[in-house]
Length: 132
View 1 (cartoon, helix red, strand yellow):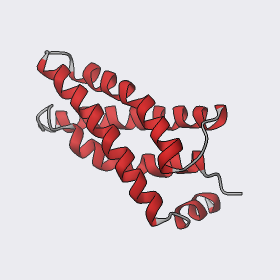
View 2 (cartoon, rainbow, N blue to C red):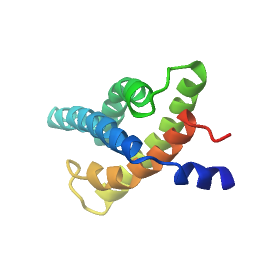
View 3 (tube, rainbow, N blue to C red):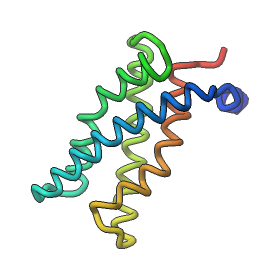
View 4 (cartoon, rainbow, N blue to C red):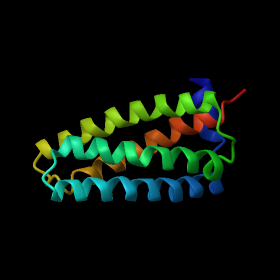
């Protein structure tokens, strides 16, 4: 718990700003693919998964080189994969929950993103900036 709190306290404004840019672009790419696949009558969860995984590589490279200014390594790559597996499961669960609540499937990702993106930032930041 102390490691998590130290990690949260050490956020910098520029890092958060770069995360917003990277996350915004990755999310736009993800949502764009999702929306096009919905228009093609692809199942909502499958469309979401395809969009997520296609935006994943872009997100990893931008997170490493732009957001956290680190080189890609096997270690942070594996950490990023694990973080995004957690994030993906959270997002799919939230997507289906909001669709179940009656939010249109084209709009259901929006509240899912609002919840999962801050959680993902904390996890991914920990991957790239382990507190010593």
